[in-house]
Length: 53
Image 1 (spheres, helix red, strand yellow):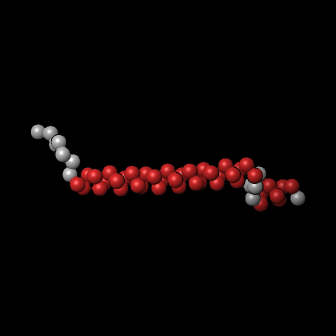
Image 2 (tube, rainbow, N blue to C red):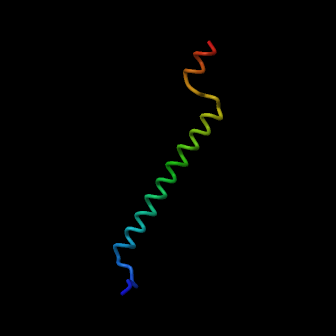
Image 3 (spheres, rainbow, N blue to C red):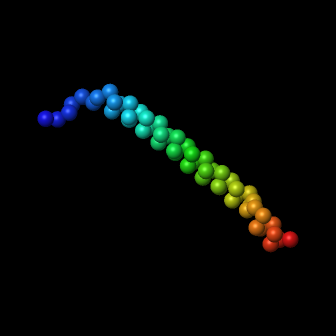
């Protein structure tokens, strides 16, 4: 016997999983973007400034 019709809870779980996946992907993209910008500007914090002075 196979299950033909999905239950309502499966549809809700699928929607919730898609939402969580999109939020996770957005967070990863934001962190990656901030990292690229920080490295691109050459602003590595106090360690580089201490060496130059």
